[in-house]
Image 1 (cartoon, rainbow, N blue to C red):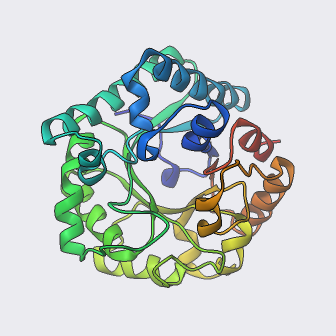
Image 2 (cartoon, rainbow, N blue to C red):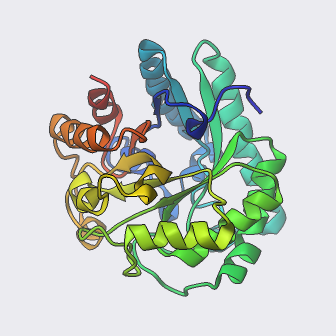
Length: 305
C-alpha cells in the first residue's frame, strides 16, 4: 500500500477518471460484453486502449499536482456477472488479481504522478434497478469473495460504486472491515435525488453508518447528474459531511432513458463543471471530483479549470 493520504485524511483535492465504459463503447467503438471493462485485458488492443485512456488522467493530475484515484476495471468482476461470461470461481479470482496488477504496472509507468489504487466493487445486479435484493448478511457473503481477493493484492482502498440500496452497502462494508481495508460506499440516485429503492440519500447514509458503526471511511455519489442530487444535499446537515466525492454523469437523462440511448449523450463539459463547482462550493468537505457515464477527460479537465 502507498504512504499517500487517503481522501478522508486530508482536505487536498483528488480526481478520478470519467466514464470508462461509455468511452470505450461509444467513442472507441470497442465491444464490452455486459459492460465489463475487465474484458479489455483479454487483447493487446484492449490493454492499449486502457493505457491510453488512463494516461490522459495521469497527465491531468500531474499538471495540477494532485492525486489520481485509480479504480481497477473490476466493477463487473463479481461472481454473477463473470458466470454470465463463462468464468468459474478460480478464474474470477485470477481475473481480479490481474486487474490490480495491470493498474500497478500503469502506476509504475507514471511514477512522477501521485496515485492511489482502489479495488472497485460493483453491485451484484443492475446498478439502475433494484432486483433480487439481498439482506445485509447475503451481501456480506456474496461480496466477501471479491473484497478478499482485491485486499490480498494490497490495493489502497475498496470502493463500491453505483449501489442502489443500503443493505448491499452494509454487506460490502462488513466484508472490507474484516480484511482491515479502508472502504468507500458510492450510491447512485434517480432524478429525484433518491436511490433506486426509494431511500433518501440521507436515510441510506445514516442507515449504513448506524448499522456498521460508521464503517465507511467516506461516501460518494456516482452515476447521476448534479441536478439529480444537488437538492438532496442539504447544506449544513451533518450527514452531508460524510460525502467526500462526486462522479457525475454527463447527461441529465434518467437511468431508464440512458438505458435506451443508442447514441452517447456527453452533455456540455463546461456546464457540467459549473454545476459540480456549485455543489463543492456549498459542500467544502467534497474533495474528490470525477465522472461517470458519458464523461471523458474533457469533463474532468473543466472541473479543474
